[in-house]
Image (cartoon, rainbow, N blue to C red; front, side, top):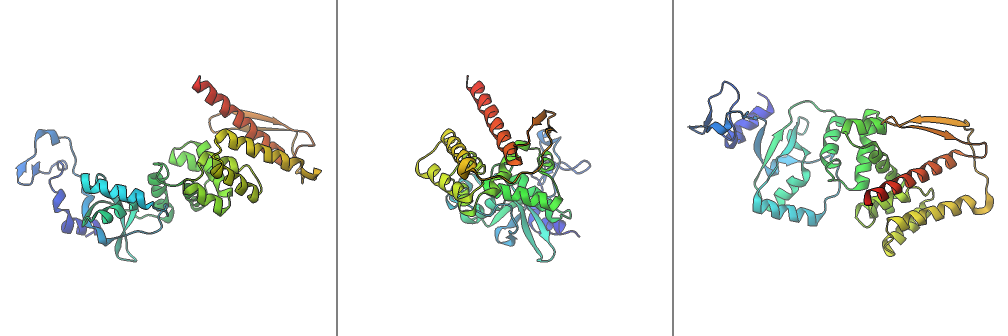
Length: 307
């Protein structure tokens, strides 16, 4: 007998009549026939309830849980009940059920004083990459992760599967641009990254900070964003000013890689780009100019939408 079947025998009596049976099973709700409105429903036997204290959590993509947010969710659960089940898998080594998706709801149910929690059993074998992928889809794509947490989860998933950022975007069905911008946050020093995840610095401003190559410059601009309340436009201007100053300071020679005079690129949506450079241009010049052009295009797009 599988672990799921065993648990259903112990805890699943409450769902025996919750939905209509599979084809060939009698249509009953307890001892009474089901109304016709359940005629096309199919019983999902992987759902049941477990004692809250019988479920453990580990290796979640999400590592930080806001206490105020948990308190609000707990109050909602007290008032309206648990609206969505969590997903759990059985860990043979530890002989216990582990949260696959829904640790925040589990914590809130405990805080609300619930003795039992609705769960969906995941009975298939799962690799570490499979587990992380489910957590990233649940948390990151549904905006449950903080920006740098999300970037770390993306990077870990890419490393486990040997994916490029483009492959990650295609697999998760998210915008490639969003993945690239998110991964850029990993360039920030830990203290600045912490201010991003705490909400002091918005993700859009944090992305602008990643265009600075010196950690101290990133810290200084981050401090101005917080203390002076710089908006996005002012942050872009300050970052641009510092990059220009850095490029001009001391007239120091750059280490230049030999670059072809013309390079052609094709994006994931079929947009083609031809880049022309001269002998005086470095790879740093190329990347900086492409970023500047992208910023201009984005500004024009935003202006057109506002018009």
